[in-house]
Length: 301
Ligand code: NAD
Image 1 (cartoon, rainbow, N blue to C red):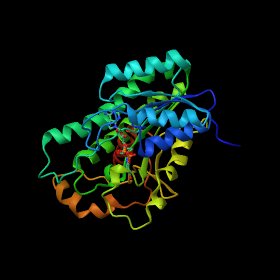
Image 2 (image 1 turned 120 degrees about the vertical axis):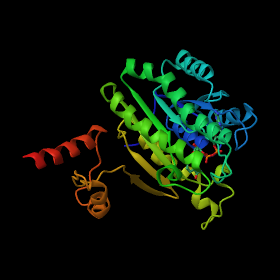
Image 3 (image 1 turned 180 degrees about the vertical axis):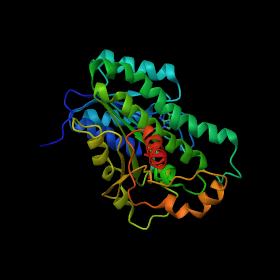
């Protein structure tokens, strides 16, 4: 059956171009009413203009869809609350939030100014927090919500020159882990998308493939699933060039070591600690403590 979003209201941040634009166009084409948010600044976050969001709204309306433009910075909580209030007043609810807005200030950590670290954290982390906070109560009241954090392979696995961006992107995964637990009883599902695409954000990176092979529209099917009726929750989905993968934060079974020579034993048994046989994907943070207590109980039995 076709995946449809009729009757659903979606906010896509940073949707004036790149991945966000594709997400907004696809959601609207499948029936959602869409708030196209974009500050309209440069890649490093400088400047602002409503025209990027307005152009995407014009595309959606020309294709027969419904959308409104919003030029709030996701870093401005008051402006974000006003955006959510406007969408709710116009369409009755916000059912889907795609936290996609982002900036880059790449430099090796040695050369990176604290201000560049702070700014990138602010846009990615606090931007997503502001938008999520602004829709959270409404989603809880209506027992329906679909939220996506846009993470990155740079956060999940690291990338030279992106200490600020990587820290921010992994922070969003932690944010997702807890929100998916807290939102479960109200049917709020929270996921993370790790895209790979040719956009202005990645235009400097040499691509081994023709650029069309890395089109942002190839990522959007993964996003649509993550915000659909049958969405999973707590999933980290990789998507790019038509490939889809899933990333996990796992925990090994480990070993129990106590005693005066414990430091030496941690070193000596590091291979056993690292052994991935029996590795689990914990359902919540407490699972680590449970594994540790189980080992301790066995030792005392
Ligand atoms: P992009 O630069 O085309 O899109 C980002 C958009 O966010 C821009 O339109 C920009 O104006 C907007 N934006 C920036 N700051 C904002 C703010 N404060 N408030 C509102 N809007 C703001 O780049 P993209 O590649 O489409 O990136 C989209 C998301 O995907 C980002 O979160 C990015 O970090 C992430 N991502 C992209 C890739 C990739 O390969 N392109 C890889 C991993 C993660």
